[in-house]
Length: 125
Figure (cartoon, rainbow, N blue to C red):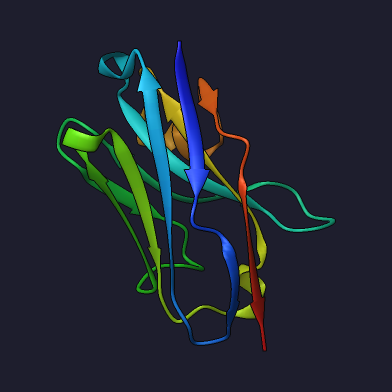
């Protein structure tokens, strides 16, 4: 089993920055990929970014490309999401997720093995 715990959410004005962290514990050696998803009030959960751990290849939703960066610190078993130039549309509950073997395409669909409880990001105009 793998446990994921997000942190770093909060309130920010449009144009500002936040960095989310996701601490992974347990059988982290079994993981193939990790990612971030978000769910805004009244909307379905959507893909934000993913990272293939073996080579750190990353993928992003079009809505965040050029503004968000996903990265990892293997020594700390921590996944990050650096969010710059935030927009009100980025307001959502952000979830960290991990997969034991799904491809990036499958991860993008939200088919993940482990999920965190989420952290709230609120962006005001």
